[in-house]
Length: 169
Ligand SMILES: [Zn+2]
Image (cartoon, rainbow, N blue to C red; front, top):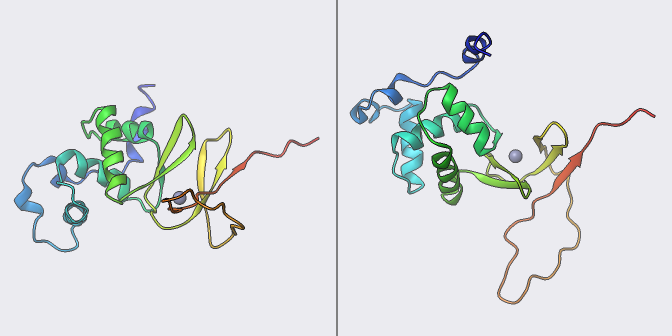
């Protein structure tokens, strides 16, 4: 285990020094600075850019569209030396979701993924691999939807197409 650690560290995104140096003045007023942009994004969404939010936001949003569980992000934070508890990771993911920065995709009762792509799209879920993959383009057509109950409207329809490997008979 200890031997494989340096290899795994090498594949991680480097957390910018600005995150570790607690000097807010350094990252203000500079356009094109990803940490500055992230702070602005958090503020625009109504969230105070605390170090923990910025640290987790950096891990979440610096690598393009992705789907993570709280446990995955917690593990990444540990490896990137962002000091947070699992409870903080949960809370932060839910705050980001409420603020519209993430979309929650519930695969089953025990597994919730957080999607950095908040646009309208559906997913493949590869059973066994526990991998959630975006379905590209308008490949899913929703037919008739039920009439929502009195006083309700349909907010969104999530389709999860579950995949499994073909068994060669
Ligand atoms: Zn997605």
